[in-house]
Image 1 (cartoon, rainbow, N blue to C red):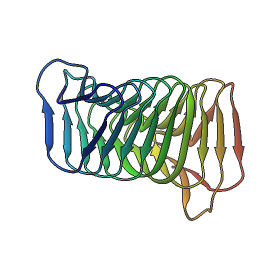
Image 2: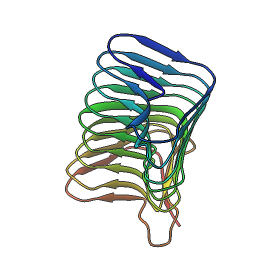
Image 3: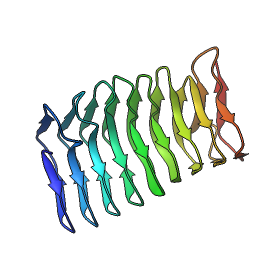
Amino acid sequence: NCIYNNSSGKVIISNGTYNQTSGGSSVIANNSTGVLSIGGGTINNNSSTKYAVANISTGNVYYSGGTINCSSSGEGIYNKTTGKIYASGGTIICTGSGNGIYNNSGGTISQSGTTINTASGSGIYSTSGTVNVSDGQITSSSGNGIYNNTSTITMSGGKVYGKNGIWNAGNGTINISGEVSSTYVKATSSDGIAIRVYTGSLNITGGNIMSD
């Protein structure tokens, strides 16, 4: 790791470049009840490092600026358990199969302004927990804008684009509201689906749902 916040400490990053050239599971890790605040700088996640930023336990990560670059199968921000990720700015770019933000098990993701661009991975991938989207733009070139299994996804603003805009693969819940002019979910491929639901539920009270 370039930085490892081991316990209840607070780490504030406002500039600098962080590279991990070999081995390790993350470039920057936040453990236990620690707080990690990223407001600037560049974090580069190479092919041998799984996560650019890893929130390992119940701590909070605040991402408001800077750039996270991921190659190969590397993930942008990984929320392992019941911690919280607050994404309000900055840019996450994944050029391989990795996901922009991965919510693994019962955590909370609040997306209110980050720009997320992925190639074949999902912009946000959530196994369980809660994902709230109120602003920002999520784009996957050939994957899912948001992939959900059993989480509750609440979208009240922002833009989500992907081959499938939102894929609800398990028994999760999708709630979409907001103004037509500010809440978009769009399938960008002719064989894609704007919102795909399997065994879960979809509740729409607003927004703009589109398909090419």
